[in-house]
Image (cartoon, rainbow, N blue to C red):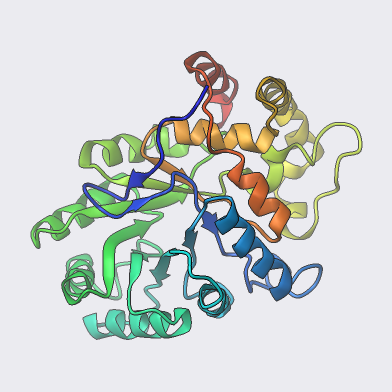
Length: 319
């Protein structure tokens, strides 16, 4: 089935972006992803250009990715193309950031690393508001919208009530809360049972779904014959244990079966299921060009309603 949705607005009447982005956490991150070992700047540079060639130009980063290296890499790569690129980045409320000025200073540093004058989306990385109050934080972000340095405001990892509160404070300034970036995949559906998804829909807030492939588990690389052995932090993740892999195998088999019908991979089916939820933008990572092209294969087609419902039923244990 052809896919009719070409772009999604970030929040109500916010910037229009493709319904799929690229998460750039792995670009420069040595601690979790092992940047500089089996991949480095040349590979992520190729991923950047492959994504653009495939029609994906929305990249999500953060000041703490690297730290700062992900933004610096993106800034360098953007200078190598004339194509439009949309950037989302994040402010982290560290303990020593106690004023609205700290928000402005952090944004200035991010813009300098990215070598741009404004970003499409600026998000609060975590719901820590005991350093700077939520109202003051939202007002500081609203000030930056009015200055033209950010186009839209988002939050990340916010529970439903904190998201509602942030929405209210911004509404007092006449500015919508555009985004809540949360973990969401077929293997992580808590946002549905904790009220986050319904609250976002009620308020017109777009969901950015990070870890949409469950750290690669939904690619099928870790189950079945010839399965890859988990590396790095995956070794201590219970989902990658023998019991966890056994539990997820029926879902992977279903993804493979549906994918064969459309000549798509399990990962592309899993990403398409997220897009089918409506007003949800998955942002899978890509450490090389092939992964970027694979991600883009989730676009240009759509699952049938019956297939969406079947995957919903198969993944209910992860709600």
